[in-house]
Length: 232
Ligand SMILES: [Zn+2]
Ligand SMILES: [Zn+2]
Image (cartoon, rainbow, N blue to C red):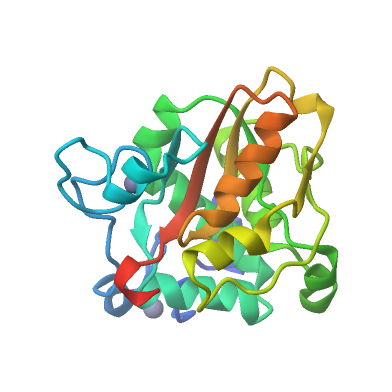
């Protein structure tokens, strides 16, 4: 069956669609432009760097409400290209290979981190614009790969928010405040929030506060990529 599927849908590079000789995610040229999140990094938000307390200055001064946010890849080069195609170029079909890529690259994280998967949802307005919610697609495919439950009804975005790009940190926090609603079903549960890119963490932090206010015990964040701080 697998062989037959490969004949019909041969594996292709997630960044440029070049057909691959076998199973894989990137063609050779794009692979050269894939950057993994360097180690060491902050033990709370995975910001690259060697910090004396193992926590970056930002997590030291404002401890985030989540337990751990992790992304295996940097949002740059071929990874940024693949995510752009997935989000803005009508390529919902990339959800499956990108979820496999995330599961493969973050194997150790998923071994250590418990909890059901909850996609970080888009607001319905943006959903209508795009026709699909990339975090939900990614979360559902990730659940299938990892054989973990996915609860996309546990968290809803009730208010549209401005795009976070170009906003200051305080403006980002204010922008997302009160944007989410969490189901009472999260009470007593551990949750892994799934999204495509982690930027400053404002959205993830607000979603975490909402889940915790509804009774979630611990919240972890996983994203495919992490925006580089100097590019924000
Ligand atoms: Zn490629
Ligand atoms: Zn940090």
